[in-house]
Length: 574
Ligand code: PEP
Ligand code: MG
Image (cartoon, rainbow, N blue to C red; front, side):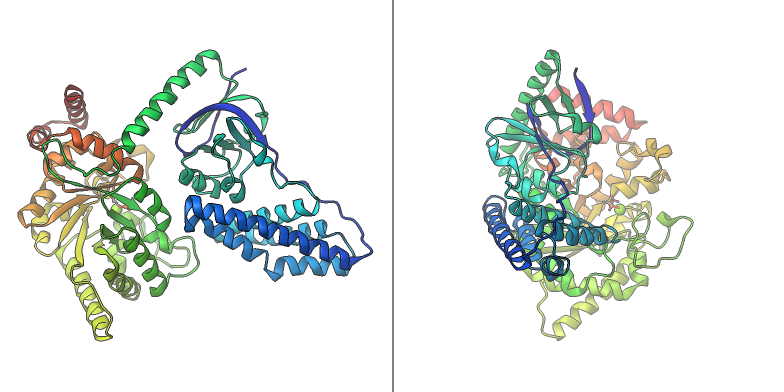
């Protein structure tokens, strides 16, 4: 019987193949008494050495296939195998309790994992998976088992497992593995991140039902939709074979845009940049050939930890991003905290309307110490690439002037200390409050650029909380009210010789791009996976034609009318 499961679409793709169930190796070793504890400790020592040799091999091949960042995890694993809290503690237990190495290691590791899992910090919680991975490997060595059966695969396969460890994922034989399904996991689990770098279709967190999938079952994995069909009907097989082929053709066509310039059909160059939340996103940005980074949401550096990141730590992150982007522009936004984004270690006053409260630049101007630390890190990093600093949530000119004054002070201090700061550093603001959009002509004189944050601009224009489902129908990027504000901002920038970009979700929307292009937007910043489809779309559009069409759209009476109009135009051009 055909059977449908849904999970998290962790890495896109469509695959059809036989399932291979990877049994989890969670068998609990038996406790056994041993007489010769010295021999037992020697056995553990040898097993640890053998496990290290394996991990080192995996590290080397990961380094070669996926680069240093992905290989780092295995360095951490090697490091863990030298951790006295683990191996030495197991040695002590063998000695003091006269027990076998498998059980001693299992006990010690279980204690460590339990402690890690109860931590507040997500990163530390994830370390539990690493401890499990390495101890499982050492125990397999002790028991004389192969760590996993992955190497036995010899035909096209969709792997099914409760979860995949980092080393399972790194070892997948891509000649045969077409994708994987796991019962647990989220978009940010190790296996999901690895799948995306390997460009392997993956659905994670498909739930306990996935445990019913047996080796040999035929499986359709539609990882673009997060769906898994077990033992499909002939009709489903036919339908998905077509979808798979179409998806592959589409992918191939998009890939051909990686190295092409972002140019319209009538020869106008634009910039198609990417939004990032941290250095882990860079790989995808580079793989998709983005023209730069249009928004680095630095607040993620401050989240999921127990204290503020230091100037040094921030400097090294900003430097890394600038260097990786090799001279392409990187717009880094200063801390945008408050509203829906909180820091567990920062006491913020309780407000009844946090989105209208002390957030983003307002908070930074109040907590100058935090702001200055970040600005110093940014200024120091500026010499490593093409940096643009962006202040979020500017409502009035005085906020911009105050932020720029503090920036100038930090710059002067650094120069006095003999620390170099780039002379071509750009300074701009996000336009996400209607007041700033309406007064964009005033602000434009004192910035190098604008970037329109439509996620907030729409929320504030429509007076509709972006987190509130009941009013989500008012998220209307195509509404003439929004288009008119966007036009005001772009015109103000262009008239003052400045550039205008957009980094809200609207910038990557294929039904908005033609209008934005027509209104004269220069830079579009979106998720990395949208860059190539956007480049392909732009290459088919005439800017001149769309300036005329955008003017028409501005006079329409509803979002629906605008959408119908854009879609009809696009269809007639195709
Ligand atoms: C925006 O408001 O459009 C934006 C890009 O910022 P964020 O989504 O981080 O608030
Ligand atoms: Mg915003």
